[in-house]
Amino acid sequence: MNYYKFTPLQKTLIWGTESWQLSGVEGSETTTDGGLTLNQLVLQEQGRLLGASNYQRFGNEFPLLIKFIDAHQNLSIQVHPNDEVAQRHGKPHGKTEMWYVMDSAPGATLYNGLKMRLTPQEYERMVEGDTICDALAQYTVQEGDCFFIPAGRIHAIGAGCYLTEIQQTSDVTYRIYDYKRRDKDGNLRQLHTKEAAESIDYSVLDDYRQHYDARQNEGQQLISCPYFTTAVYDLTEPMTIDYSELDSFVALIGLKGEGLLSIDGDEVVLHAGETILLPAFVKEVNISGTVKFLETYVLS
Image (tube, rainbow, N blue to C red; front, top):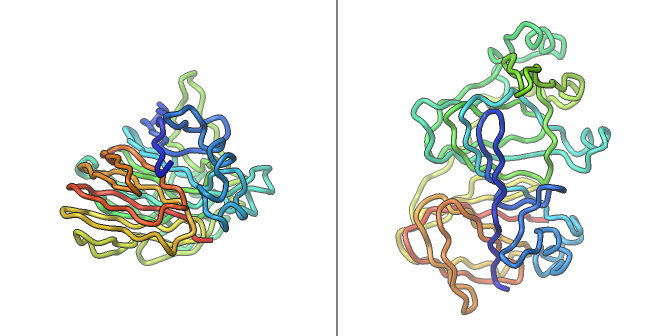
């Protein structure tokens, strides 16, 4: 096939909801219209789907997890480990990710990164004293904002945020602080103090927001890292995207409107709120309609 659509997994959590659009996470895999799980599809198609170099790198596991996140309450203050730390803890992968903010509530905020220099000892004291949020860079967000969260960067999504998350295939999260919140059984939610302390990158940046020119009818690259490369397109006129030099699958994530994709004689509509996976052998896509979407792939 020249494209695949998947049935999203809907997850209801203590703080809101997630729609897992593409997932190869064990126990939480999305399935195609034909009933194959994502990793079964990888096993069947191998390099034809992932790209030759990506298949050599990742084997039969799809390398990205793509979600829509709708936060009704604040998420915990958290950090993700890099690959090395994760593997020390018995996990196959760390977790580097990005956020693209969609139509969020007015005044919605999130945390991303430290705004002051801390020692590990100061960090521990602030967590114990319920003041760790005072050390974090906070942003009021609007549609189109983009943030990169490499492994080791402390972060949290705030209430009212609605966003797309693209990340390594990993579900490992170390919870630092959770506002003394209790679970459905009345227990304080578990913190991962030791694991988080091993994972934190104490670097401080002036600005953690990704800056780009928001232009219509041309792709604007947002982030390129070893785990994913992502661009945003906002189309009001037809466009042809050339993938002839790319040795990777491509995921197209619908944000607004709808676009008609023509792929080697096949046609499929990309709607807002859904994701279409293009195999690596697809070399050209023609898109028409009024549509805004993210494009993401992996460069090996």
